[in-house]
Length: 390
Image (cartoon, rainbow, N blue to C red; front, side, top):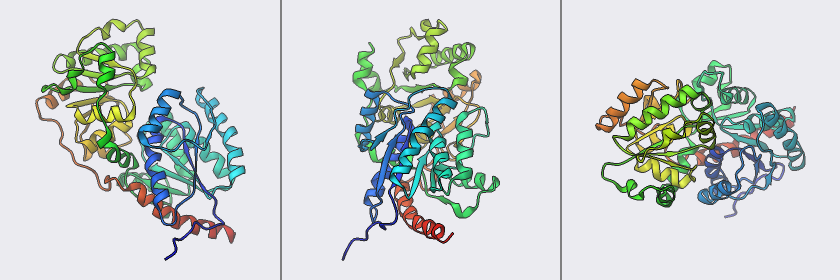
């Protein structure tokens, strides 16, 4: 029996990554493309929106993600400058490789920039993780999500409420497919390789035995501008974290933006606490290892809300809203914002063993990427057949 081949008239799928969360979402998709019958040819483009050579190299190795075929090396800049530069550098890639579609994930500037280039050139756009809404237009990610979804040809969702959001915005249900969460594909695929970063804890001057202590530990991440760009907000949050650390040690994987602001605001003294273990940003496997062993996670990250739900670890989200409501409705996530009393009381409940148990949401089973590959292969043929008749 011969193996079917990818139709010769269809070009490769251009897959775009731009920032760290994109890599976790793209790795299982590329594996599924390679395993699909027929195999779906792809071209991996790294826009370079976020780039740190050492962290990038480690992340690609951790995820066993192939090296990018092309790196646009855009670098940092304002939202306008970065978006424009991605568009300028991505357009020749589309011209040269004549893709069957452009696949984007998540909600970073690269997602929207590459979407706009593709749409204006008549190339179908596929958006993975579509339909998530915080309904907070102050978040640049929300603007990116809404605009990308409006012009994408195919929209793959992680939860049922996302499709309802899209339908309210006038998007045809035929363009939408509920497939599950590719971030959880990566989590489950890599869980056996995850380990807490004992070496990094020791290098930071702390006892690495904390990760094996019977009393346990908590994990903290903070990077949202609303939390770390305002001195008063940062003082309040560091204060309540210090309080909680007296009940169990907290491992704080600190984002460079957060550290820079703590230094700028003259708050380094608030980190002089032997039970607040401050580490540099950690690799993917190290963060998964930390979360898997934690009693509590305090974060303002979107991805960690999903991962803690999949791991069954109680999570307090230090934001006023979430674009991932299923983590609250069915998972282990509780929204506390910057309400210091809520952070105190909810963390006390968790440490007393009364935290949310939660459950894995529908189709968060490690096979979302396979469903995407199978569906996309069939739909691409139909899209191109339809366009050929226009």
